[in-house]
Amino acid sequence: MPLEILNAANEVARSKDRRLPKLNIQIVSETLGSVITAGGLSINANATPAMIEQTDLLILPSLWRNPMTTLKQYPQLLPWLSRLAIQQSIICAVGTSSYFLAAAGLLEQKAATTHWYYCDHFAKRYPTVKLKRQHLITQADNLYCAGSVNSIADLMVHLIERFYGHSIARQVEGQFSPEIRKPFADHAYALPESSPHQDETIIEAQEWLRKNFQQTVKFEQLAQRLNISSRSLNRRFKQALGITANEYLHKYRIDNAKELLRTSNITISEVAAQSGFQDGSYFCARFKQAMGQTPLAYRKAVRGKLFKLI
Image (cartoon, rainbow, N blue to C red; front, side):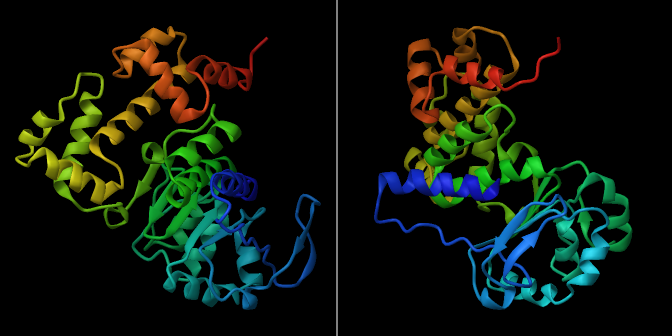
């Protein structure tokens, strides 16, 4: 799943700019050649850990059954993971592969999660790790843990936005899982130091916009509330988040509209109004610009993939 999502994002990006390189993806195993998974699937490994001196992203797949069996079988992976972490590679552990990060000492006093069935065992074995049982995704600097196979899809969309930008992330999201995904920030736990910025004024602005997004927002008044100029508000927003305050508000409104389209039967006009858009036609145009499809098409795509009780 992560490979399909990453390749889709790369293809979309390259369709817009052919100068961008193709992804260099390696399937890493202790030995080269065919590897048979627990489910009987044959995967061709084209690299060993010794061959990977540097990488931007490493995904550790979930382990089948008791993770301690695999952990004891491959202790040589621990110094390799430590070296990549020092190099600031992004490392994502799916399910019980978080045991490898903990055993390597990378999660000391850091947030982590694991498969729900092993939470008690994980907490007992690694008491210095800040286990977040209630979160399916955690972030601690460049270390991510996804508690389930499904949640890795949410995490990949978040990383695609980091690598390729908001527009491509939304296109990929719509293609793969519009019916299940919630924004990363809504259900992920991140340590304060892992926050994308530390500008307390902009954090206050973000909180105010999230509370008042349904109203008509005047950024001049927001700037006065924060005791800064409108120019400073936009400059600091851009510096902290890479987007302007207006773009942040628009994105939050679109995310709210998506949730309403997924979970309610209210009309498109009502979705627009409850998401802070005063004009239904304008809402439809902006939604299509952001998601690549109309609100109605999005709702049909979502509802078409939901299970129905008969």
